[in-house]
Image (spheres, rainbow, N blue to C red):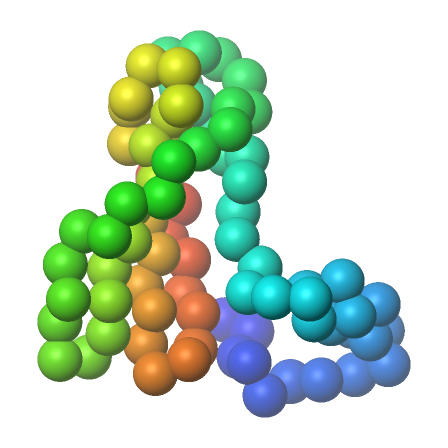
Length: 80
Ligand SMILES: [Zn+2]
């Protein structure tokens, strides 16, 4: 998995795009809707190792993804 400390000139543009605040996934694929949908981010759990967030479809409420926020590092686990 690509870590947060791997910076290269190729990634410079992406870093700039994300620099105006924490980047959040705003659209994920929803199996029920059959397309990428806007999602609602919900804080599920606060754990010693980090905060766990859940993404739900804005239209039907189906969970479409999770994110573990660990000490400023971001790991995405997407459920398809
Ligand atoms: Zn949906």
